[in-house]
Image (cartoon, rainbow, N blue to C red; front, side, top):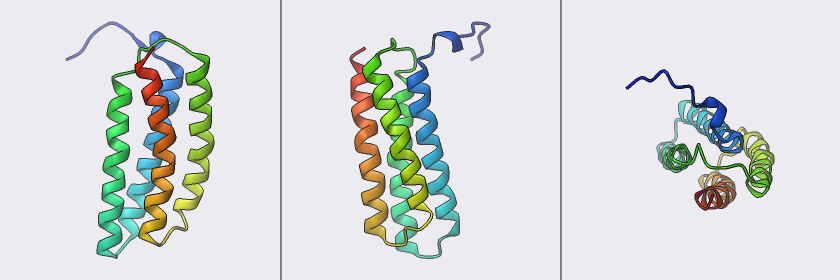
Length: 119
């Protein structure tokens, strides 16, 4: 379905920022998946990719929520954790380390999503 209405001006910039962080993590996990030959690690990576994609879908439903300084603060925190996560994903070779790193990131993302739902 196409429309002539441009909603980009009313989209919440912090939700966009959160989505961008999630897409970046998903892309990095995809790269790690493509590079691994370990079936167990591949399965763990796919599971984490599904978890990240689930949050992307949740945020798509919140794209037009109102602005909030608390949401902006949470988005900034996610951005900082995202940078750390992306660096560590390059060197993680243990499944438990991968799951813990992504879970810590997603915990903060979940807080931001939950708050966005209240706006």
